[in-house]
Length: 96
Image 1 (spheres, rainbow, N blue to C red):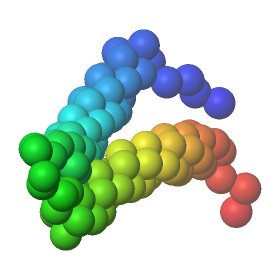
Image 2 (cartoon, one colour):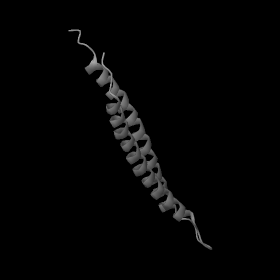
Image 3 (spheres, rainbow, N blue to C red):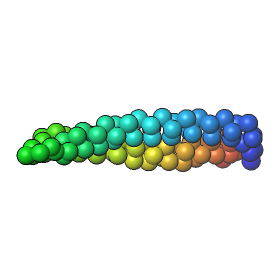
Image 4 (cartoon, rainbow, N blue to C red):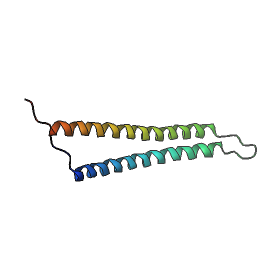
């Protein structure tokens, strides 16, 4: 059975790292926008009630950002496992 070269491993690692960074940044930006809307909706002045519509929308946007981060991380884990299995199968001798 052959092994994966060091350069191939490092290249793959950088590709996965860039994917992780992109997913986390996009998800965190979405979550931060939602958190900002939620904070703006609940900051009230004198005799002013919170804006519940904006607060609910901000909460939903923040949750969407969290879902994007979790889905991206789980997708990347799945990809790493699937790529490892595919690489192992392609490198193993055929028994046919």
